[in-house]
Image (cartoon, rainbow, N blue to C red; front, side, top):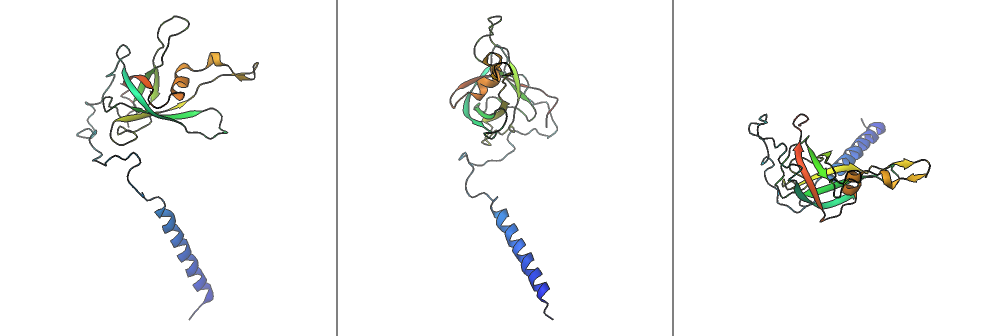
Length: 191
């Protein structure tokens, strides 16, 4: 027996199935990796055995002898109407600054402290990328930084005298700029 309602139900199910397949195909990679790197085994930075934490790099680079990395890119990652500004900063370390997920980098902003004339102190930022970096080669790492500003109710504007030294430095960096880094810091929050 042919029932029109069953036929329409079957057509509806087929249409939904076709839409699901089409939308899933949209997420399939269409080309090579974005950075144009050759894919390699993704375990070259893994501990062996996996639970061994004896090889975790901790405080390899110190305040008096920091590592100098180069900024690959700095991009605003919040919408134009968002309150505040958050930037994604990719830093190239040529594989000379290994780290594990859950660790932090110390960033030394350029310049001196106006109060005491000494170089600025280190500010810690959680590393936002996996140990393989943004290009999956282990040569980069990234930070997500919210620009620290202070809204002055009297001025009805941001007070530049009270802006965050390091967050503003990082959010203003451009490709090729150098960043002094210490660490990696932390062994408690590893993932």
